[in-house]
Length: 411
Image 1: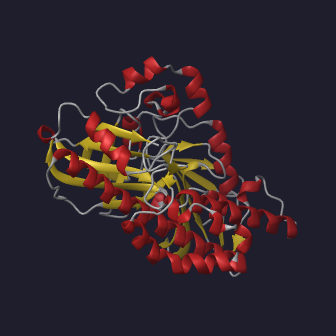
Image 2: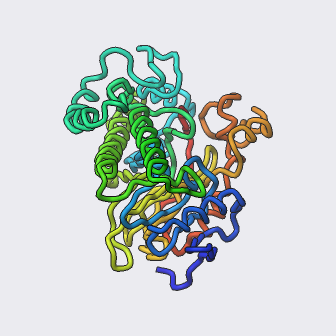
């Protein structure tokens, strides 16, 4: 591990924020949000902010929040278990066709995403009618615990959420599937998604329960999104069970999609793919039980990735930018964490006002992807510079592979 730490310290009235933001924007709204969080009485040591940090709903995106005796549902958020999966194949760039549109079309047809016109018809980016046999088989492994959660909290109305219909589907927004080339022109498959509608329902439900508890106990907070569930209460135990299930759903969701992408690419190329590395499948919106600085704590990573010593992770850039397969350095001061991507530099609304379709076409030149007005909010210029983000966290991770997408499917 690098002996020279690259973080700066923000002293709050009751705590600390250590932030890895040298050379990248760190807006005041995110700074204020982090200060409020660091002042909570159950924070262990400090709050860590990654170089892709930016203001978020519920909690700062790019934050690592270690707690003792409590969890903040809004800090975990509603996209529970959102994360990345990447797989190196035995294909070389020369094995891909000159016209990549057929590959993109095959992937779009194989994986439900966004609001599409593909047949069979999709329901909000999910399956309509009978789900594929492979999806139903994986749902069977999740069904028992899901039933227990729904019975414990019928008010959450989880049974009416798009649970099985969203399993094996991409979603919208910044979720994506990509075909990438590494520094040796080796072909990688990479995707980004989470627990979809059912995770959103679970997150939203427990966020409101936490806020109701704060009102009942007359606990005043600087931000209502800091409403927490104390360990030992029924709501805490139920939330931890539900969030763990949603994180398992998200992992399974990515595995199903990756299998579908492999099959689509094989069908398009007329050959079988052989994975060259164990697939990397990691969360970046989640909570886990870990041991740091001599104590067992809950670590909430909101837009951050676990980067223990030797652990592989994924840090994607934006559409048209480079992405990285990294190996963690196990830096204890970041609670063994790193960034989850480039991080937005402006809101989606601001990006749509500032950039044109022509701007987006120029920024994604050489990438087979959508180039229309509905994806301008995801254009590369709406994000921070990924190279600056990587430089700011040189003491957290080392780069193993550098990837550049040639095909990008957006939700």
